[in-house]
Image (tube, rainbow, N blue to C red; front, side):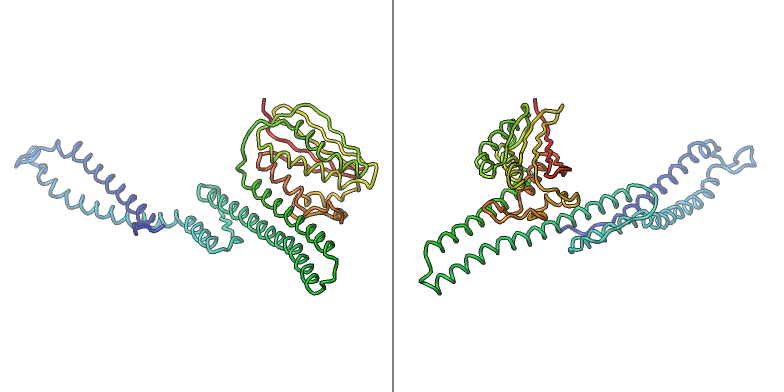
Length: 359
């Protein structure tokens, strides 16, 4: 924003200090006049003929008072300039750090020393903001790079298939069309997942009353054929758990959790349990499944975009794009909830979602 040039904060403080001293000096002189000089007789002989009269006192006092006022003003300007400079030095550091951050360097930190005061509190808050911005920008850059890599793969496969079909007209046409359809479907699924993830990260979601138990039943009914195909037992139990949010996003969240629980399970004979309950002012959804044991260090990374985890990459039609739990985490954060991932000792994962409940 373009602004007209004005006095600096240092000059304003300096003039304020000097003005304060000048006013204080003037008040002091007024007190001297009111309570002292006004009682001195004003005649040619003075008091008892030997003391100076008011006229002589004023003539002697006025130059000294004027000199004192000038001294006070100079002292106020000089002292105010020095004091203002010392007081505003931390602000200068913060301004320099802000300009550095504005130039694109988010790794710079002020780390102001000294005891806690308003400027150091501002400095710490600014450092915390820079830390969060740096983390957010790094995450977005990593996400963009991963998304570009994931989208490039199906596009490259499509181009290869088209090149092969053009160079080899005798190749079976239906086979090429089927493979192109599969690759295109995967690219569309990835694009829709990215859009949904972006929508959840925006935080602007429509609010309506939603029962997580009904959402869980709908998701289980939709994914029951997949569970039966893999010979996985899918069980939904629990009481009503009302919350406020987007029914569409919450359904996608539960669908992703249940689908992950079914896909990343034992080859056969595994179980998936979905439970809902109201715990005071909190609505709770738990999804628990059997499966391979997960290293504790791997679990916190599962909500990162495009993170499929060791031993979790699949090659069948449900391979996914590595955004399932990332979308879940995004939707939960958009609804001001919490997500807990706990590996089961016997294998598998226990996922607990807590959202703000409504009555």
